[in-house]
Amino acid sequence: QVQLVESGGGSVQAGGSLRLSCTISPYSSLYTLGWFRQAPTKEREVVATINYGGGTTYAVPVKGRFTISRDNAEKTLYLQMNSLVPEDTAMYYCAARWYSSSSYNYWGQGTQVTVSS
Image (cartoon, rainbow, N blue to C red; front, side, top):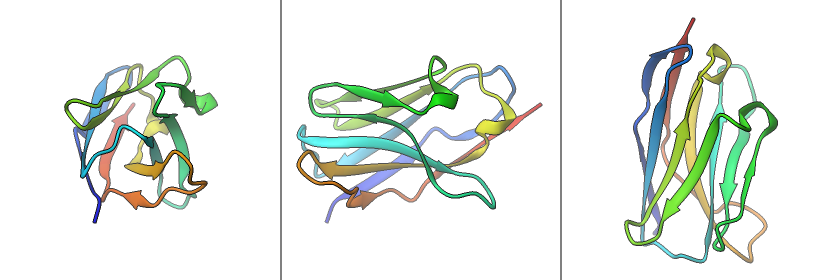
């Protein structure tokens, strides 16, 4: 059973920063990892992904403001979020899938991010 545990969420004013962490156990450097978010009344959306080679993708609304990274030695995924805006308010989830899989198999419970204007 793969367990993902997010931390680092909280409340911040617009323009502020937060850093989310996600510990993964058991961990594999072959996982593709991702951050997703879901705001009230909205569908879950992908925020950023990082593959086993370090290649990254970002959703258009967060490009240039968010940075996804992974530390294989620490078995942890990160999301550095800068210049936060109220539209970033959501529950944030980390997820993992094998590099050869087309869907994310493992999910965390989520951490809430609230940005006030």
